Length: 372
Image 1 (cartoon, one colour):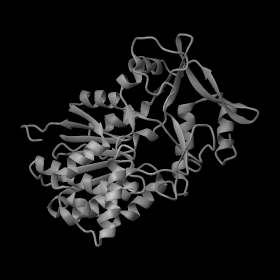
Image 2 (tube, rainbow, N blue to C red; image 1 turned 135 degrees about the horizontal axis):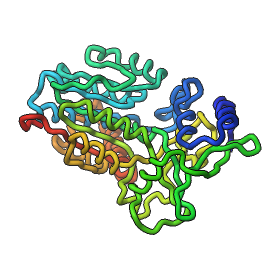
Image 3 (cartoon, one colour; image 1 turned 180 degrees about the vertical axis):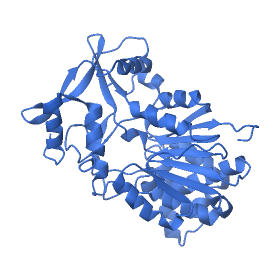
Image 4 (tube, rainbow, N blue to C red; image 1 turned 30 degrees about the vertical axis):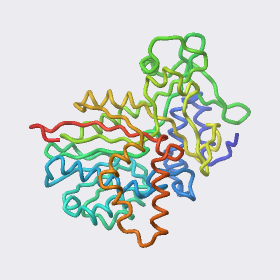
């Protein structure tokens, strides 16, 4: 592995002074260190010149589908004078830019009622985001945390590949007990070691995920405490409306049936999966699948109901088939452009593209009086 990065001396110093660090702490520093963290570095991360794509980068038409979905929600709630959209982790703002641009053109009445909050904690990305969304400044606010709860207006809280980038603890089942994987030093390089879990709650979470049953040694449980923190923040914001999460992930039932026995955590660099999680600290993306069962349970505790977990493909098709995907092809200037967009649509919805890799969780919170 390569540990020769600007972040490595910082990791080494902390390990030497405090002992082995949890993978949660390692991932936190690698991604979010204020100077040398992956997301705070100036290097491009998204798109063809970066390390990974999102649905918005592979197929900007995804933004148009979301715009129609949000418009339909607004109509469903009776076209209120204000409709809150809160996007968590908007990154470089491409999805927001495309969504707002198309909404202003195609749904001007809806656009005039929008209050769009882009929640981005990375100072580097927030600065770029503000510049990119400046043409929509009358409708958009860039903030580091979700805005204060509104008790008056409906809306939608949504995110596209946010939760997978939150740090995880790695627990491993060994000799009939849960142990935690830590990052240590060996010969002046990063190395794995195992020890007692850093907090009792982690063991409780692992037991909830896997339930009773026979477990093979080496089984990995990925515990993401910040997911609960963020979910609780989001669920408390809206008086009523929809919670929409787009990400790659699993349910507890799927894990119990043998999915990801060795865990789902991966690194990404230049569009290639990196299985060595300790390589290039701060220089590669780190990610792990999300737990949709956990999300549903938290949302239900805040009054959300009717969890609907479907593939991104089905979500896109349900929206687009309403008008035969007219939104996607309405402004094509040539047959060549029409063919290009058709190919992008295939990437978005086909199983061999992103269609089955990404999933969409939707949950609703009814408005008083039954609207929504």
